[in-house]
Length: 135
Ligand SMILES: Nc1ncnc2c1ncn2[C@@H]1O[C@H](COP(=O)(O)OP(=O)(O)OP(=O)(O)O)[C@@H](O)[C@H]1O
Image (cartoon, rainbow, N blue to C red; front, side):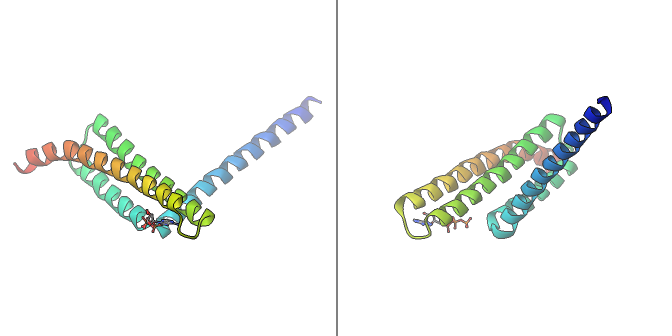
């Protein structure tokens, strides 16, 4: 009986891991789909690579790395939510509709607000280091 219960427990654990792997695979598929279809997403990914490389060269401190990673991942995640909303709106309302347009405008506005904040944080992080390097 004990062996049987252990076996059931193991099978349950394996199924749980498989389910989590499937969720991970679905999420990766979403990231790839957004990157393939969205020019803004491609731009943010290229910008992320450059800013991370610059941070490495400028020897960012631990707290500066944390701030940079939170800003970069936040921007990418927000851009994907925007893409998901645009796709949903196009699915639900393929024709012109004032409210559909409003949803897209607000989502785009949210991305712009975050991008402005990210640009300001970028200036605060990079300008003093660049001035110290070249100034
Ligand atoms: N079904 C619609 N009804 C009314 N207005 C719409 C509709 N679809 C799009 N729009 C308007 O056109 C704008 C651009 O929409 P679109 O779907 O082309 O997104 P986008 O900003 O070009 O995004 P991306 O370049 O990331 O694909 C929207 O912000 C909205 O103002």
